[in-house]
Length: 249
Ligand code: PEP
Image (cartoon, rainbow, N blue to C red; front, side, top):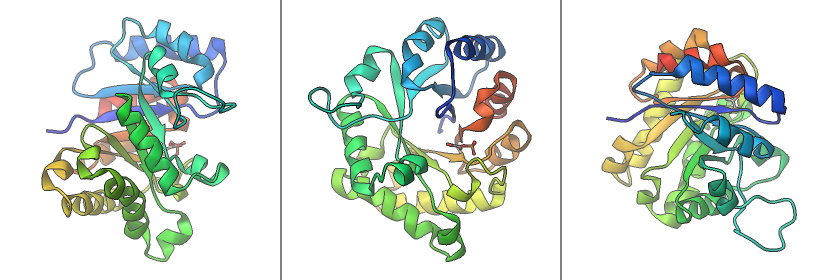
């Protein structure tokens, strides 16, 4: 039985006041909620503050990126050791915004995946197609290519304990979520692709959906057999809304 994960990706949003208000709100809203893992990924500037606010909470702490080195002359980068030092466990890699604005290749994302595993952290590996790729019928080929960069370099067992977030780029931040049926179809295809390497790994790996998930569409998405929670952007910035999504899982 897979345990769903609902994770908030705060992106480049936050202030000290906002972090306190949002995490206090989530701690109150989610107290005693069972059957779902919940995580938040604030900007790294706020990890220390978030670690303190979540000290007695079941909510897990995450981050939005990592470098592939633990120390050295890598100006501006953040290491896995540093993330661990602040209690972060779930680290988003390969988000489409990083692939697009920072030219992160499938191979580089796969290196980050390996680095997180080596350091005992949980990769949340984002995959997904653009609108043009979707219209050209290339959705599964794109997702398979992004996954294969990890599987073929590290073996399919590398996916054990990791999280996959299927995020169609056309649905991110647009208010135009995939329908539950559309998302289920591609989640099942992704799982089938992984099963071509290992049925055991495929049956266990958590595959989240991401792209305009809100309180209003979460239950329908989570009712699908291959959708194991969500990676949430905009709606993760509101405690009541994000908590409602988590409770729907
Ligand atoms: C995201 O950026 O990971 C995301 C899913 O954003 P949104 O929920 O705002 O579409």
